[in-house]
Each structure stands twice: as structure tokens, then as C-alpha cells.
Image 1 (cartoon, rainbow, N blue to C red):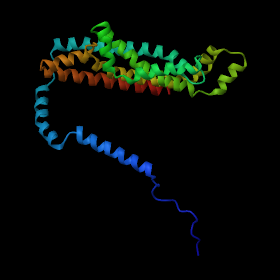
Image 2 (cartoon, rainbow, N blue to C red; image 1 turned 120 degrees about the vertical axis):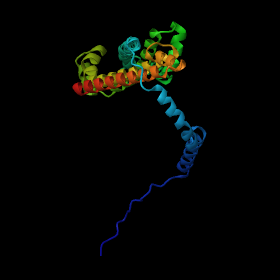
Image 3 (cartoon, rainbow, N blue to C red; image 1 turned 90 degrees about the vertical axis):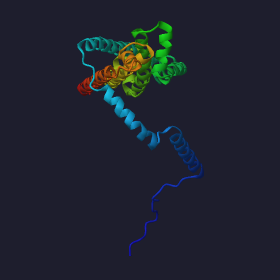
Length: 266
């Protein structure tokens, strides 16, 4: 006869009273949120005819030469906002990541102050930053570029610091043993090892900047978003569909380019 096993694992994990209360509370919050703000089937069915009517007014897109030419230059401005803002943000993120990284920061325990600034940049939405900079420097592309800089700083500052922290401590210790200073450690051990992660993060930051720069114009921060807002405000739906199509092409082209670059550096 075969012996019965001494221990048989349970099919379902045991849930304590506290965990059960938490699960019930989370479920109640989810159901309450769905009941308050989720669209009902009735509203969706009522909206389908209006959506069909809107699509009928948006198609075909406006392909007049004068409009396409004007839109082309606005798209160039949008790309410039994204590229300039991302480059400046990445450049500033490197020293900020150094100051906030655990184990290598020259600020010691005060590195949390820098981390707090990075978290603030990341927490406030892009459109809020855009409103702040529009109020500060006025309407136009400069406000959009400053918004992308802050957004990139919040994104890259965090992930650059994590990449620095994940580097091999043995290489840092070896340079320190032969008398190397903090700059030698950064330039010879940390940055070379973290470079693939830095490049991938930077490319993804550029993708995010392209998407963000599209909508910044909705609050007056320059770029193609401003043209899109004007088109909808003036009920120029064929112009709006042409702009949306151009945005789609630009975003897809940028994603393809960054994916190709990531494969090259990986």
C-alpha cells in the first residue's frame, strides 16, 4: 500500500480576516467607480448614431495643398518641441540621477531632496505644467519645450538613478581602491555599464515626448495640437481628421525608428 503524503498543499491560499476586509473594500471601490462614471450600455447605443454622423463629417480628410503645407510646418514645430525638450531633459537628468542615486550620491542622506524634485516633475500632469509655463512665458512653442523638459526630467531622472544603482559594486570598489575619485567611478564604471539602459530610457522618453507635444497645443503651448483645437472649435472636421491622420503617421514613424535604434544598441 502507498503511503499518504504527510503534507498536501492547499488548492486555494488561506485568506485572513484583514486580507478579506481589504479585498471587500477594494471590490466595493471598483464597483462604486464603475457605477458612478462608467458608460452604461444605453448611453453607448445612443452615442453610436452621433459618432457615425461625426465620422461622416470628418471624411474624407482635407487634402488641399495650402492646408497640407501649413500643417507640415506646424508638424515640424511639434517635432522640434519634442526633440529639443527631450535632449535638454536628458542632459539635465544625468547629474540629477547622480545626485539622487543611492550609494553614489555626493549628497548622502540629502539625496531624498533631489528625489522629491524628480517625483514632483513626474507627478504633475503635462497639461498642468503647460498651463504653468504658458502663464509664465506666454503662448507658443517655448512653453511646450519647457513642459517636455520637465516631463523628461521626471521620467529619465528616476530611471537613470535606478540604472546607476544597479551597476556592479565591484567595479566601483576597484576604482576606489586604486585611488580613483567619484568622477572616475562615474565615468569609468557606472556610466559605461548603465549605458544600454540609459539609451533605452532616452529613446522611450523621446516617444513619450512626441505624444505629449501633440496635445500641448490644446492649452496654447504650440505644436499641432493648437491646430487641432482650432479645427474642432470652428467645426472644421475635415481639417481635424487630416491632422489626426498626420499625428498617427508621425507617432508610428517615431515608434518604428526608436524600436530600430533599440535593437541596434541592445
